[in-house]
Image 1 (spheres, one colour):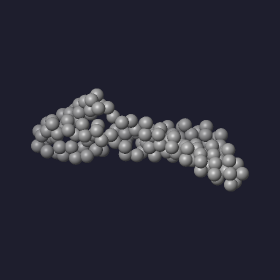
Image 2: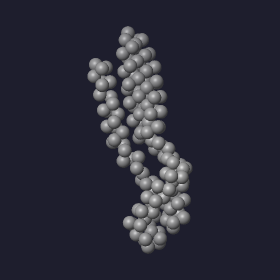
Image 3: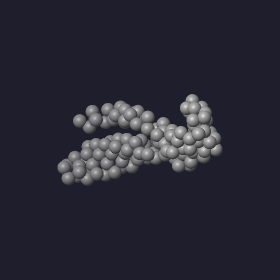
Image 4: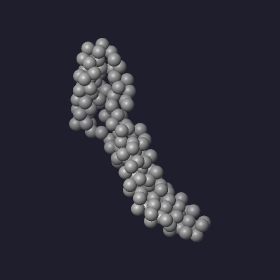
Length: 141
């Protein structure tokens, strides 16, 4: 039973990460002030991209993948310990610990990928760049 579950685990984790990938590509939303109305949506989109690229080059961006890996590892440790405790009570500590570790790692990785762990330095850089161009950033989507 556990071998069947663990052999499908990488597929499940990859599917979860791809499902949350659109959340990884947040961009600033702009208030339609006079400058925005004057330059139009196409120019505003190009300016957003330019500011995103400049921020990436200047300060980098904290990786969501690194966060997912860290929380996955923590979840695996916690799940393994809980599984071991349950296994001691039920008489199968090895398989329970393995199942707990696998489940905890998967849950931790998915939680880390879905968490809103935006890099505040990166966001502040992009917002300042846009303000200097005449825009009014109002949030991220």
